[in-house]
Length: 148
Image (cartoon, rainbow, N blue to C red; front, top):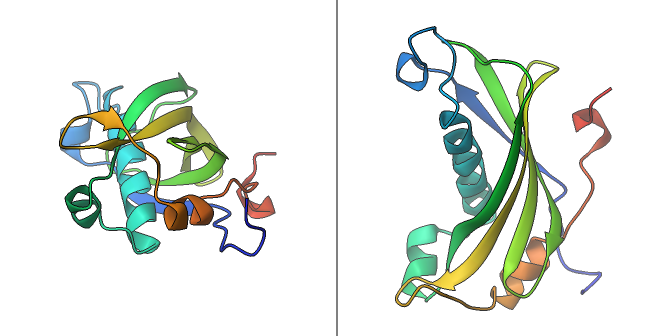
């Protein structure tokens, strides 16, 4: 890994819970937590200057390979939430994310997500472009984003 490469320590993305995100009890439907995480990863790439439409046109895209999540507390209608993401590992074709969903300082959902770089035209794994891989180097989450 190039020690002079730009590193991204973490990324935070705000999420508001809308009525459509909830079940009949006003609690976020379990599958929607994954939508919140997906949006945060997409916005992180966009903030780094990597547009997914342009990536696909260049023969690169990310798909989720595996996900592990733990529901700790329910999110509810109208909650203001925050997805805090860090990268824990990067290989030639995969990126591992630790993603946590918070309401204020309260951790609601804790997940590990592995995405794999594919060529969208044929759906097979391809190497993550070197410039992107360098910018996605794993870094610890900043101190103000850790749990007590």
